[in-house]
Image (cartoon, one colour):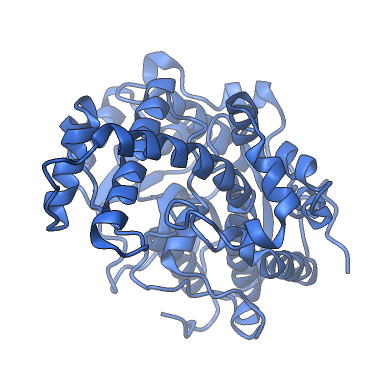
Length: 424
């Protein structure tokens, strides 16, 4: 069974399922590498199962880690010398680019002079997303539109009306003000997209750029139930869901006994990337991670229990303090008393050593972020094909602009909307 060629924009229902099956099997085989969370487990089981691999990873310099964090494909190729099956990763995650080049993207991107209140990265993402959807024809519904930045970008290339749906009334007011200011054919309206009575016009085109978790899954179901002529979306934050475990949409995935059973925490792994974070944010994140790991070592000794103890998110002001202050805050949150003779310098050094170890073990785990994400998105594509859509799946921009660069573009090919689907 072979994967569909990366150069093909359209995959038949059978080839999409074949791709999903291969990915599912590969992820099943490699569960020992991605299921354990190194932050919580100082000695993940795979380090004993693959000692040579663990030794190679431990030998990486900080410079090596920097390079591999930004290029997981290169890391997979490097480590395949010790675990050959990692070489399959490239074929499993390779997808076509759905834009026609920089010129087309530039022509679809709002000029900075019209991008009021629009962050630069979001402006470029919206432009690339729009370029990948051309040509546009049907009236567009921008799902979870915020201030309507994507809606206004789409309106410049769409001959029909663009409507934005957003639950936050203040964003709707601001977005309509911007649309009037620039005379865009855009209307935003207040709408809870999770409302049971929401219905969409069948002759419309539903779009969503980075709608989170249950919000983008709601669009997929709503579009199929109402028979929208087209639905295009780039999903994000898969873990933001009301259920503890991932609930597949596709009948074929639901019917597969070998399908992965993914917990919410494992869905979060799919989006744990900081490729777009500024250096200052990365540095601050690393510092707090060292502190948390230092406190973890301290609490294990104090409690005489060799288990990870979750600590809640810290207030921002703590990041500007020191390790001792963090430990006292964390101990208070967990009801622990710190002895007067606590050697904070010792535990800070412990945290720094653990951080170096965790960083290297996480490199291996992070090889599976994109495969897990694609596993879910292929489920979405299969569901839409089961509902009578022809589906294209690819990327709309480079990973450096956003790691969440997957795009599902589905066009209805049957005449009538399907019956209501049984999934919640």
